Image (tube, rainbow, N blue to C red; front, top):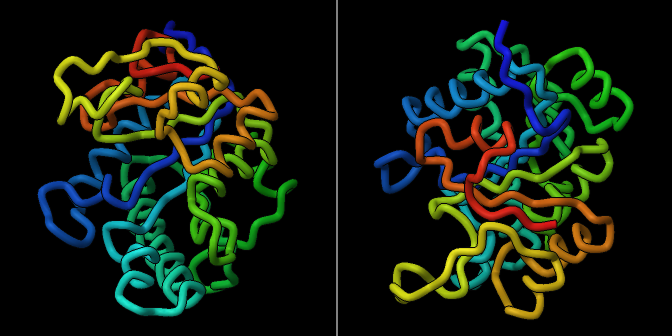
Length: 239
């Protein structure tokens, strides 16, 4: 049994749909899904209770449909459908590495997922099952960032881990500005004052008002998820 002690008991991991792309320009790279599943298993083996909110941007992003002339609600619903496909792929990958999991969807799709019932979800977590949330909140106009914040609060998560392609929050875009400063630790208030784009405004306001910590880290670096769960200096901690 591992002697490593996690810093958190229950977490919500926010995964973008793009995290499943791998080197593909579009779709789901199964090898990448399997790699993410292995990273999740590492923290699952530490007896951390894990809930995951999955996005759908690798398949369809609602805002793109709107920009092309679609009705906003219709485009957003298509984006929600994309998250369901991603959740099915991730659940398959998790099961193959030995993680018992449950797919919880905010839209009724009985053949592949359970509905969101707060008490049942918490029970799944307590039994050591990885919970995958799809379809955001089941309504248009709400991002998966907002869904992550709300679900994290509903299930009593200790923290939201936001997996990205960069290793934290910076004072400016580090790709465009080489002098951009990375913040190791920053408060919710300072994020707002500095105008940092951590989450959408609704999501971040929910976290700030309810004192929900956020950790932003680079998922693509091997071992980062585990190190973040152990409380090591990975990414940016917002509290």
